[in-house]
Length: 306
Image (cartoon, one colour):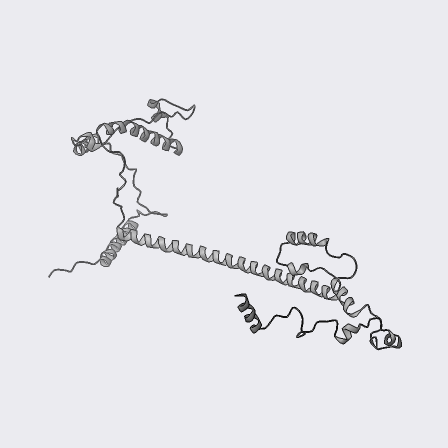
């Protein structure tokens, strides 16, 4: 009867049991000493198999044209950046491998030398050296993965744009609220100033009407005030006071001022007989030389002229 194959866990347990048995045997023989018992491996020996390397090189080598291989072996371009310029033959020996900048510059100048040497040769062979405008290179990643990356970038960009738009709207809203508050405060100040000017004008403390021209600019108001300054009366009571003085007098006793007295009753100097009996004025309906003739009279006058 065939035994079933051991599973992974069973094989691991068997190996651990074998290792424990070996350790017990070594301990009984006195081979184990106090301390960490580790198997030390000797230094790895480097094998310089020249014949094997040449054989591998011969297998790799193919008899192909240079256009198919495009291989070139050149030294770096001479460094003419400063006083440290060295001949091409000594550049490679003078490179310090620990100096990263010098090492990378050597690689760069070597690639530059290869480009300068091979471009004319490629042009002679009529091989294009520039990528066409409609060139599409096959990428290492699949289209599905690039589509996911593109969607993720678009989502991130849309979120950033939305955040920036919200910031701009908040700033504009704050600025608009500030401007609106300033406009309202300005209107309230102008209204209070106008009400104060109206009260002063009503009480006779001022005779200026500049508060009625509040929509104009201060310069325009100043120009108009200067033009009207010569016409307005600068001294004496204002227009309102003068009107009241003319209508009601200049004060004094008011009660009984219109009563007749002996002197006023006997004074007939202002009596006019024509005015009193209606002889001095022309009443409507009174016959006169300027009255227009009637309709029949006008028709008779027209027939006579014909």
